Length: 382
Image (cartoon, rainbow, N blue to C red; front, top):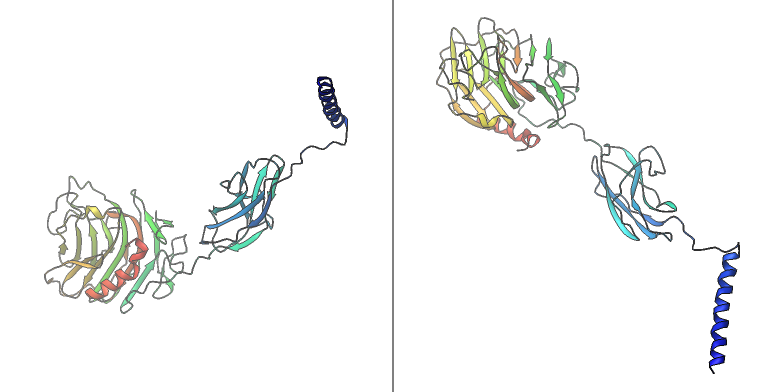
């Protein structure tokens, strides 16, 4: 019995060795075959915005080797995007369905996208899917009060400011403001579009003003970064940084200022009070006693009205107060122009981001001021 078992094991070992030697020595022997991964699907794009979207895919076979990377790739110029185009790398390292996010897209552009997976053999791709990002909607002018509106400048409206240059078109007339210039101001694509005046000094001006005014409203949407002037406000009182000021021609019909040392009443330095004034044989000024330093680097609607008798200052649609009746007779019937972010006769100004500047030939009512605030506030985070 033992003899037969010995013979059996000897024959088994011989046969196994012979088979192994045969296959190793046979040039036609083929080992395990590795191919690129198979992807059965690329997901249709979803959650499409102006600049982002979501897609994904399904890896149905790893091709016989571990997957080392997977995700989606896309292109707006190639019909068959590859890894040399934009791609993500957050897909799975195995078979299964996944999703991934496309970012950095351009608005209103058509993209080709497909899923991919890579192993030691190469990269396999899923079918190509096509989608288009949302287009930038045309600018919608806010529904502000129109009655009496004589100046409407809006840096976000391409019909008013074309992103570059020194021409700012009055949306009331549809024409460029005559004799207008922007000094050291630059367009910034923030909050729809703003003109940014730096701390080193910058302003806008027109040498064409407003004639025959008996009342008015000046409205500015501004993100004040600070105030500056020709003199050190810590040692002198001649300091009136302005949001808006009519140029001086014997008198000044309108001044809207911030952080002044006081036009008619001395004010401590850095009081950050809002002040309005008319100069006609002397200053007739109205200042709000509250310190609004917290308004720095925040968007504010600051608005001044003169109804033919009194000055009223509004902040974010709410009245801060009204002056006593002014004894000025009448406004100067002529004007040589106005400044934005600049004082009437010196470089004192409130620097920062200016979005809109509006002017009316009448005093808006409290409810109309609120209408204007509500019409634009969402643009500035309210």
